[in-house]
Image (cartoon, rainbow, N blue to C red; front, side, top):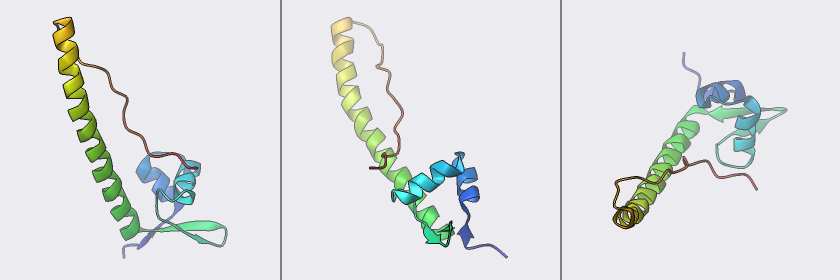
Length: 97
């Protein structure tokens, strides 16, 4: 039988982070979760849906950054006369308030 909920430890394992980080993401609303007593449970379907949403949002952000940087890179390449690309930082999750 397949479980319909995850524990914090399971979510942390999936996200490859510490359980405290998973709790922070749930508490600030980045990830879905229900506080039951002293612990949290995370519905599998809601968690999967939110991960899909985050993946699509971040892909769109990267696409927009690439378009913006591609234009900027072309200007720099013309100015420098070389084919060097600008290093970019990886996208990150929004921080909690």
